[in-house]
Length: 440
Image 1 (cartoon, rainbow, N blue to C red):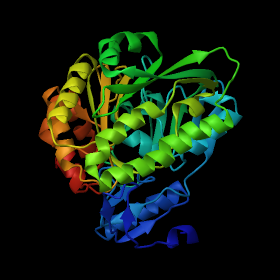
Image 2: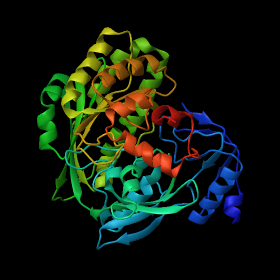
Image 3: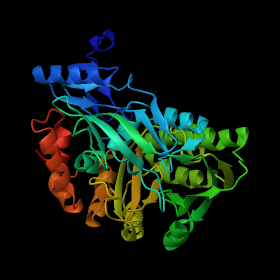
Image 4: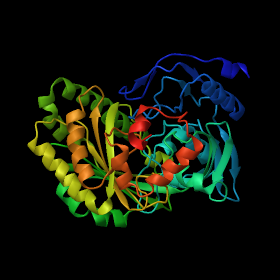
């Protein structure tokens, strides 16, 4: 065993939003698959549960443990780029930001991605991180193979051709099946996207929602509660030339307005809730229309420095507008004061057992509140609306669903739990959160 693994710690762990904490008995950062196998076997001998953790961008306790916490800090970097197969194999602890920049240097890109790059590739895919897309799906749907270390220390390569039954469920595995050590993604030659951001009235965007989705490769919008205002974003492939935002104008939009002033507005709203509707009216008019063209990760992703807590549900796409209108009506008639915009995105159906878009075209409605603001009343009210429409909660975001409910909205739920029973019968990778959402 190397010195790298020997340096274990016992400090407390806290997620990015600060709403989940844990105090593991010990924490390890293995530098190789062999070291990870040794760590798992030692934890099993000592009667400790094991959870892998990424950068903590999940808002749930998926990674919380009082046993052994596996940090992937040293399992990083690109193993192989296969230009014939158009794939890249990357170590599980690699941050998406590092992957995106490395691919761009090689003239390559993922097809679609979410709007944050801080997560590790394993953490992002294991919880079903997604962006928005008419035809292109989540990051997990772009996986072509993965390497998984199971509870007994077996190292499995999983793909459509090898351990296909495990591959079918492990692309979104919640850390419940084992520890992912490497992922192979499909890639394509780097391309340009033109982004068009523009304000639009709530009534117009909801009336034209299906048309806006059909006409754009990637469409999303934000509604500002307590107003009838939205901000829309349309991303489509472009022949170029590249025309990124100017340094000054980009800093004003992405840093000063979207982070700096927004941080001040959220802090003021938390201190004086009665001011939030007025702040919302100002905020919803602050961002101006703009158009720019750049490589994908610079268009899809944005800096997110204002910390928040989030709930998101995936609905059948045809139910999304009605559900959003119900959320608006609920907010309008309630005493709630909501400082964060509500985000709406879409995804095509995919074939991953626990994907929020598994087997159906989906639309996502995400609600947020500023870190430190009581969120239970708002999230509970929204969750009632979402579950009434058969919504599926994002695996990395706040929800109160249990295994009974989730088995009813995921037709392949039993397929996942059967693989879990086979790979981890003693629940080495279990915790209280997984017991609630997956059963035991």
